[in-house]
Image (cartoon, rainbow, N blue to C red; front, side):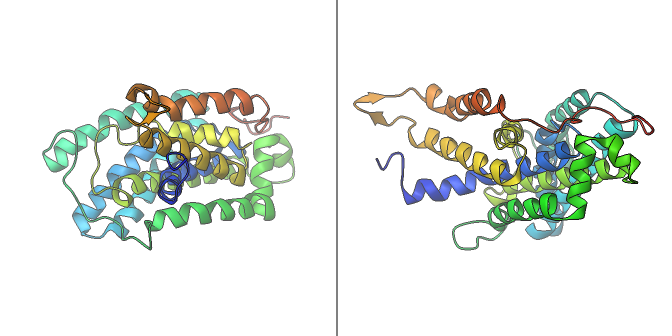
Length: 297
């Protein structure tokens, strides 16, 4: 039983769920406003890299965290500009940013650090108790996001823009501005998620560090019904199976050693199953992914 439930597994679960929660919350803001943001994966990569560069240059991991948030917001702004103003296909725009992050960060490692594959080690965030500050931030942000989206006039306007932008426009809500703000918020959160990976639990940035966590965050958002608390719960579940896959690797269960390939695939299998079961029941914002032209009715 200790292989499946223990204090160590629980602590690791909360830690591993952190980037998924932040990415999922970013997706909630963006898609509740009507903008599909699969660029979260790439933005997390840029955020992780920016956090290391910031810590390396300034010597402060806290400034590295701030720079990661700013860079995340900047790339989200680019996605918003392409999606909202230029009416580009939002999936293609997000894919372009993801591809840019894949090659761009590796190229910049060579340019800035004269290295290949990974950066030098830098100052990391301190630990408060058992966790980096970003862990506490992620769970606090789930509550804050719920309050913002469901208990404030701003959240009502944002959700209206994602459900019926023409109606929002009619009552004086600036649809374009609301979508820009929502997407930028999602980028800031994704940048923080990336920073958690590079200077929260590690001390460097390496190739493929994000490894699909941005996409799993989006899956958690969908499984959680585009709701901050639901997305957080789903992210914790995915985090648990991520830790479980490491715990079970090479460990005999009922006398049988499960091959590493199967245990490593466990979090992704859970993601697919969760989407298959819950994704069909979850109903996203009606205008999500649909560009809005001012004056449409």
